[in-house]
Image (cartoon, rainbow, N blue to C red; front, side, top):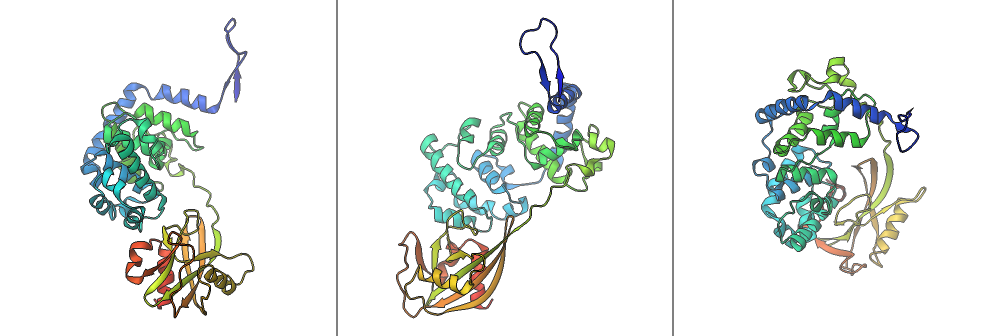
Amino acid sequence: MRLVAPAKGSPGKRCQCLTPFHDLQRGLHQIWDPVRIAKFQDALLAWYSEHQRALPWRSRPDPYRVWVSEIMLQQTQVQTVLRYFDRFVRRFPDARALAAASEEEVVSLWAGLGYYGRARNLRRAAIEIVRRHGGRFPSRFDEILRLPGVGRYTAGAIASIAFNLPEPIVDGNVRRVVSRLHALERGAPERFFWEQARAWTPAGRAAEFNQAVMELGALVCVPSSPLCLLCPVAAPCEARRTGIEARIPPPRRARAAEEVRLVMLVMEHEEEILLVREREADYIPGRWGLPTRALARGESPARAARALARSFSPEPGALEERGTVRHGVTFRRIAIQVFRGRLARRPRARGGDDGARWTPRAALDALVTSSAFRKAIRCCDGG
């Protein structure tokens, strides 16, 4: 940081602090004048009109479909979302249909996408859209931002793509494009990326432009081995000019995975299996799942399994250890000891109807969304 003294006779503070961010911001505003920004916009939009991917939410970008797609695309690759989007919007074609559905039904249809809090927030937001806006999706940025599960990026994406409002968006693709264009080897404050995106976003063509920047980052300005020879905006790219495009952005330090040990019960009575309602904070999310408990250091899996079984049935009978299944969740490696119990009599599941239920095997697919629970059931079945 450097200190700059004010001119003689000027009012206010005795000195003004200029940070590296202010220097960066001032320098880039001088380099990217309106003429250069216009050329950049034109080149990128021309490329996008020819090379954009045919995605179902682009063919009919009404606010509801854009919203659903943006929520699905959080933490999930486009190719995965493509397998779920059409099915979801066919079943729930608008906010009213989504609001009228049960949480269980919405989460069940979401099964396989993971991060089930997104599905719950979608339904909560749909209920709010019906209650506050009469079922019409809000068109103002501040109203969109207030919906459950919607942050600054998602609100900007919906406002710009669905309503063509000149709202900026910043995701990983946009950060990478901006960083390489300006050769930001050391990165920059988050607010810089938002200010740069706002300066670039053209009034009247925000929908196309914001999608074009993200498309460029997804197809050409990729994280490793960027395809600079195919880039429509390679000319003003400072990273390519100086030959450092492969070093931007710098690799992230890998976060060490947490090792977690669990016991899981498959409690059976004839063709029914005991399911319990899971909490979102649990290691394995999902509305319904198998009874599960984390192992304390040094705790015997068999003893933990028996204690868990007794919390649901006073006479759980003998438990058979069936093996270990492994499951990966963000930043966690989970080893699950699976135990099976066969009950001659069907005891009442403790915890009440809201906490536990006996479920026919034929209904499991509709209720059990996590692959970890399905692995445990297959383990017991010999699969």
